[in-house]
Image (cartoon, rainbow, N blue to C red; front, side, top):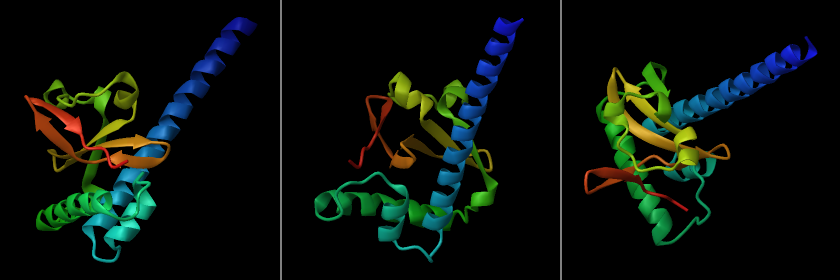
Length: 148
């Protein structure tokens, strides 16, 4: 009986940890898109608050800002509201959207964001920060652009 109880509690704790991590990631993504889609938060503030970017100046940060500005314009053009987002773990998404070349670790930390049932963007999260929200197509496969 003690073994059964131990296994049950272990499974419960593992599940609640995964659920908690997903909730944190969903909150991070929702706030990121909300701040990026609005005019109140500068791109520099978005970078500091949400992105795992070590370099704060030079070409690397200019590259990040270009992608953020493009995403901001898209969010505004489509009038995307953070409250209407649907966020799915990559591994739980339809095969139709699983065209990103990622490893198993990244698969557990990748989320797909939808707005009104339309795919919006993928998001790769590590250590509570966004490592990428953009991909590039190469030979029919998509690869994350890393901002490290």
